Image (cartoon, rainbow, N blue to C red; front, side, top):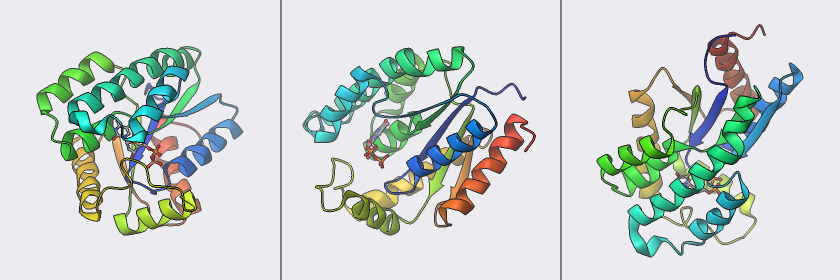
Length: 214
Ligand code: TYD
């Protein structure tokens, strides 16, 4: 198998199907006999899940993008230490629904966080623990928000879902910009296809890049 870190992240706007695809990919890897840990951000460890509730409640918004980013960062440090690194050490795969590219897109591109601050935080929080492969699921925001609302079944939108449509359009562009800068790590997938079709594309990228005999 190729010497890529077995750490795969899914990124994209709201309702793009990241969690569905995380589970489908995990299922395929498990069918090959691999151990797989699926996790998510913000969250993925008890402390980080606690911070998730605070962040998504919107209580931190009033303090600005920097304060919010420090909360995401604190959660990520704990998540890496408690969940991701131990799993990788025992040779498990880790599949994570959102990771650093969400911070780049939401807090960096959309929140106007100073790029130098963002870079410094990445260095401190992630160091060299970059994912081996990242999928950006790309979808028109109107469709993504419609899906997210159907899924929520009338529940109030969270802090980020309640932003205006222009925000979500800018978010889509931000993810595509991020992907274009790191084509070796990031694969963009058309999120408008059926879940099965997307899962097939994801699987073919994974098998090719990691050298799995499929
Ligand atoms: P979640 O309900 O997990 O959203 P989704 O189902 O779209 O993945 O909520 C996570 C929200 O947090 C989402 O709107 C994106 C946002 N977020 C950031 O702004 N920065 C980050 O670094 C991360 C990980 C998430």
